[in-house]
Image 1 (cartoon, rainbow, N blue to C red):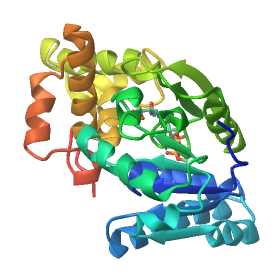
Image 2: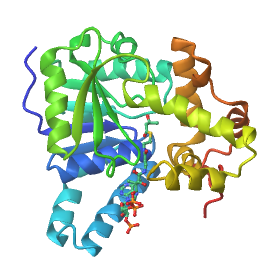
Image 3: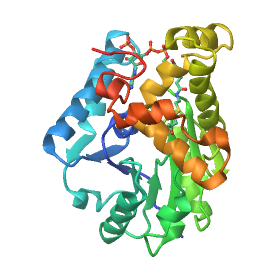
Image 4: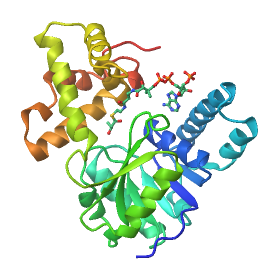
Length: 286
Ligand code: 3HC
C-alpha cells in the first residue's frame, strides 16, 4: 500500500491519553481533529491542552505565538465524518475490544483507504482490532505512555497483517512528535506493559505482604530503586480501572499468575476508586 504524506491527524477519544496525543500532534505541526462524544467533553479536552501549552509558555519553553499557532491547528468535533480527509487516525477510546471493533468498522466507511489507522491500546491485540476492517494492512499500534506529552516512548506495533509502509509512517510521526519510537510485534503487552504490569502487581501485593503503607512503598521504590514516581502514585495516574483491565487482558493471554490483578485493586476498581481521575485511589486528590 502507498501511504500518503501525513499532514492531517485524527484522534478518536480525548481523555487523558487522547488529549495528550492531540497535544503532541499540534505541537509537531499537524492539522489535528479530535473527536469526543459530546461538545462539552471536546471543550474540556481543548481547555486541558491549552492549559498545558500555556504552562510551557509561562516557563519559557514555548513562544506565545507558537502556542497560538498550535491551538489554531486543533479542531474538536463530535462527528466521525470529520476524519474523511485525515492521513492518520489514532484511536484512544475505552479499552473494550467490542467498542474498538465497532469504531474501526465505522472508520473504514469514512477514512480514505490509503490512510493509516492506529490504535493506542495498552493490552488488546492490534491484530484482533485490525480484523474489523477489510484493509488490515493499514492498521498499526501506536502505544503512547501516560502522560503522553511527557513520556518519550511510543511503541510502534506491527500486527499480523500491517504493511511495512503503515508501520514506517507511524514511526515517522512518532519521531516528528519528538518521541523515541521503537518497533515491536503484536504480542500481549508489547514491550513495556509485558514487564511493567506484573511488576506493578507485585508492588501492590507487597502492600499487604509487608504491611507497608502506600506512602512507604512509594518511598521504597523511588528512594531505593530509582523509580521517577512510586508504584501507587503511578497506578493512580494510569487509572486503577485501566491497570486492572490491562492485567486481566495479559493474564487471559499468558496465564502468568503475577499478571492477574491483585484482589485489592479489583475491589478498588469495583468501588469506583479509580485514582486521580475519580479523586480517590491509593491517595486522595482535590
Ligand atoms: N499532559 C501534558 N503536560 C503535562 C501533564 C499532562 N498529563 N502532566 C504534567 N504536564 C506538564 C505540566 O505543565 C508540568 O509542569 P507544571 O507542574 O509546572 O505545570 C510539566 O509537565 C512537568 O511536570 P512534572 O513537574 O510533574 O514533571 P516531572 O519532572 O515530575 O516528571 C513524569 C513527571 C514524567 C510523569 C515522571 O514522574 C515520570 O516519568 N513518571 C513515570 C510515569 C510512567 O511510568 N508512565 C508510564 C505509565 S504505564 C502506561 O502509560 C502504559 C499504559 O498502557 C497503561
